[in-house]
Amino acid sequence: MKRLYILLSILLSGMILLSCTDMDLNPTDAASTGNWYKTPEQFEMNLNALLHQHYWPMERNEWTSGEQIELDGLTDDFTNRASVSRYLKNQMDSNFPLSTVMWDISYTGINRCNKIIHELKNLKGQMSDDEYDKIMGNALFYRACFYCRIMVHFGDPVIVDEDMDMDTEEGREKSYALARTDMWSVLDDFMADFDTAAVMLPVSYSSSEVERATKGTVLGMKARYALYFASIRKWDTYGLANAASAEKYYAEARDAAKAVMDLGVYSLYDDFGKLFKMSTHHTSEGIFVLPRSKSMTNESKYEYLYKGATRAKLPRLSGAPTCCTCCPSWDLLCSFTDDQGKPIDESSVYNPNKPFQHRDPRLSETIVPLGTEHLGVIFDPSFDVDSVYSSRYGGMVVNNDSRTYKIAGNSNQYASYNGLVLNKMVDNDWLSPFEAENDKIILRYADVLLMYAEAKIELNDIDASVLTAMNTVRARAYKADVNSSSYPKITATGQSDLRTVLRTERRMEFAFENQRLYDLWRWRIAEKALNSYNYGLPKKNKTLQRSYMDNGMWFMGAVPQVDENDIPDFAAAVASGDPDFFSTNKYAQKLSQRVFSAPKSYLWPVPTTTLQVMTNIKQNQGY
Figure 1: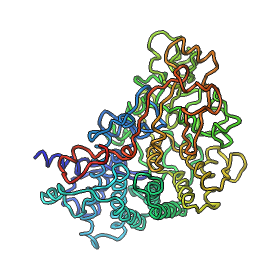
Figure 2: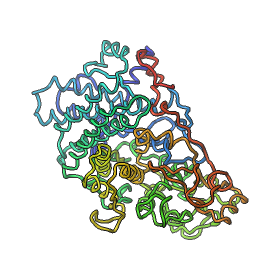
Figure 3: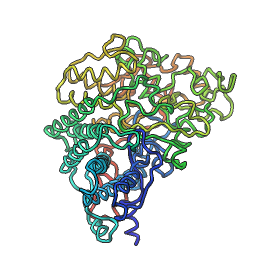
Figure 4: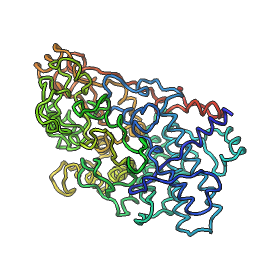
């Protein structure tokens, strides 16, 4: 009985999943038995289960176990006071909660899709071709996404035959004997499923329909996964490199991204900062977006950003308890170019004492600029500022956003340890009761443009369309016309130079959108980016803090080197400033150390619950 219960938990638990923008936020679910697969309406009810947030976990309130952490929290864009996650301590094992949830919900989704596909084939000819194609196309798309996600996180998948009915004892018994399949032998099958779904699905839905996956959604996600696996084939040094395979999947990524562009239905939203706010919904940039709503989802906290998920990203003076555990890192701050498009170690205008001046505009939209108003309070972590003005409180207030020694007691104890707080997506609507409803953006048009450019760069098929795609994204950041001279236009044409620009552009554009981990993995640069320290400001100590201020170290006393992958190297000789600024704890503090073990940490461990009941499944290397 225990064996059956565990397997059911792995493959059958949960009734939740996906859609695109403007969907029904209160989907009607139904039991997944054969009795519920007789009419188009019943298939629709089962597809509605694939509309929930939980099937696409990216943030801390979506993992169910202790809220956990966002995917960006596993990267060099993120810092949490003086600690790091188990992943960045190299302490993952088969009980790693994120692994368990990602594996379980992916296979729950696969099982549901298999059931829909199997039962739908039995009704071919009993419904209109349009109804059939929409149902089948959605099921094929969701299933391809789930399998690709399994391969990204775990490597070789367990392929579950779509005719294996988990509602029967026979089906469950067969499932116990399943083993893993070489991912490269089945990847083409999932690429083909994307292609089939793209033909079946509409470019858009009518106002009376629940809006699920569209043709653009399918092609865009195909481009993402094709680019991911192409990158592995090109950059892996642990036995997976294959030049011919890399070229094949880069071409597929290029063609899929171009097909999305050619649909002519997507464009960039005109304001980068406002794109991520609570008040912005259903934009022309959104390709794969899950709306959030508290009122329309029976107050299920997994369907909106619930308390801890918001408070972690708020400064102390927001009024939120236990906040400032999810902060942008100094690595991220230093990765943004100057306003001439140059890295800070090559810039003639960058001043580390005023790090937000003369920078790419996306920096200030991502990280709160020092000395500016944020959530109705001047945000100033300076040790010399012990009170700040607050329009929200109507006067001067104690500056608990600074860990300055000048404030007695512990009211400012948990102010941001590195002096940075998040601006992207955060607005006044996040304040008490600290529940937010920002759209969850899984794929947007800017990503399609940069994926198209990257695929062409790696194919060394560089033409004007590559620069146009990249400049379209950059120009939007400057609120400039792409053809104007009012922004630092990308003009490089060499493959190596464009690769560096592309990787820098991705880091600036998608910070805190939970894409960084996948870029580090697929480019095989995680061992460099993640084997380093998280840096911050001196602790609450008068001697340290006065030395920092009196010796002119605010905000930073040195400029780190920035490499060709847009990774600031604080351990190398600094480009300018005090050569000891990062190397001792006299000024910059080493808050914590990140540890990444390659190739082990490029995959997550298969969960214990799976290994216990499916004995033919082998664990990933190193776990």
